[in-house]
Image 1 (cartoon, rainbow, N blue to C red):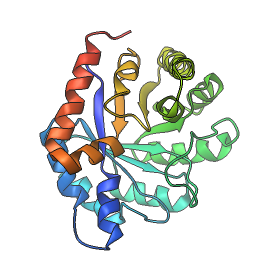
Image 2: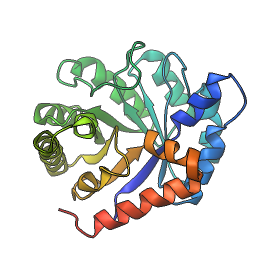
Image 3: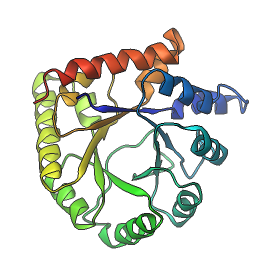
Image 4: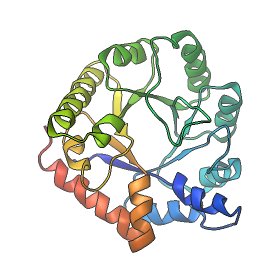
Length: 245
């Protein structure tokens, strides 16, 4: 079975916010993505509201027919909004206003006390909780101890690798972390920087059941349309499923 595809539509909102216009609409893009085979819609409501806005989350919660995954920082404000809109999953991510995009995973080991409180609040609200972490066994074990439902492995270093050895080493770290997480009973997703040329080796890892991909799909959609861009990625995940490792 292929990995589930979560389509992140943040950068549709990035184009909209560049002109503070009403279009392009990330909600419309989400519906097109679902029609093309997406299994989940992912959005990151950042504290600075640089792309996705609260109203987007509100409308998406009403119209998404698959599942809604809300990426957010582990802050009081964001927990309040998550409990208000009840996404299917909350993925807790680190966040800095200075960054262009998320630069790495949560330090679950160092932030365990705060994260434990946040996870408890979200779980009490019947929301599935995933932690966005680097492919590191200590972070995997810490996520398990906090009783998170799942992890999402940060694939940024793999995606940015420039040499075969570096790419292979990073892929091994991802594979080892995924296997360890699955053995502990955690759901395993992966994402960040994945695109049409590098996704198959990650998608072939049997323990990774979900991939969240945004920028590359939205970029292709500018040229081919959202439905075609999503269908192309779904076909790659089907190809990868034939050789799951």
